[in-house]
Image 1 (tube, rainbow, N blue to C red):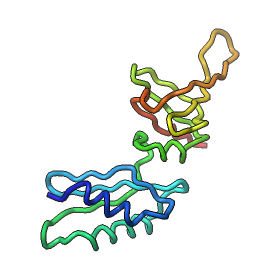
Image 2 (image 1 turned 90 degrees about the vertical axis):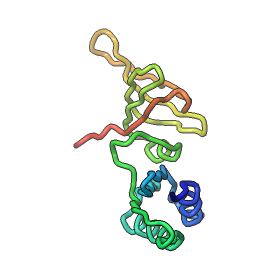
Image 3 (image 1 turned 30 degrees about the horizontal axis):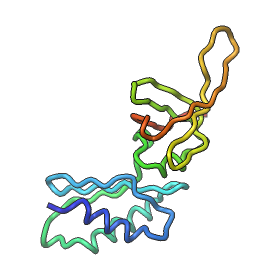
Length: 150
């Protein structure tokens, strides 16, 4: 079986010095390799293909057969790494905390340890109150972008 750490090392070597970042690397028991990568402006198909080619050049298919997929994380995929929070700063997100409570609002002030959410608080009457809620990354079950169609 192909080792996940080997794939991770190959990808890290390739993206070093670029704006690309790794979101996830998975290797199944049947050697299906999935690499999810991104960058702040969004990863292109050509960049995914380049990562794919680099991995193929560094794994001997004659030793072990494998299936390889390199892509960006889906729009509906929860954030996995802090870089995704930085990338989506200023966008509307849904946060589910460890207690299962959903919060939605604008993602802002992302730091190494956490972020703030500019959220509308539900109150009595017609006036809605805006408040910043602070979260540490270890308080979060999941965060994902809320897609809005204009």
